[in-house]
Length: 62
Image (tube, rainbow, N blue to C red; front, side, top):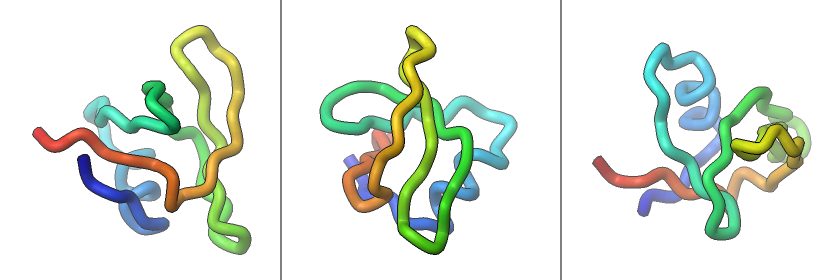
C-alpha cells in the first residue's frame, strides 16, 4: 500500500474513478481535504463520517 499526501488526496477526490483508500484497515471514500491541519473528511461504506489524518491513509497499489 502507498502512503497518501495532501496532493494525492486532492487528486483522488477529483478523479472520476473510484480509487481504494484505507484508513486503519477499513475502506473509506474521501470527500474533502483540510490542508491547514492535514486532515480529510471521508465516509465509510455504511455512510459513517470520519475525519482522518492524511498521513494515516493508504492507497491500494493497482
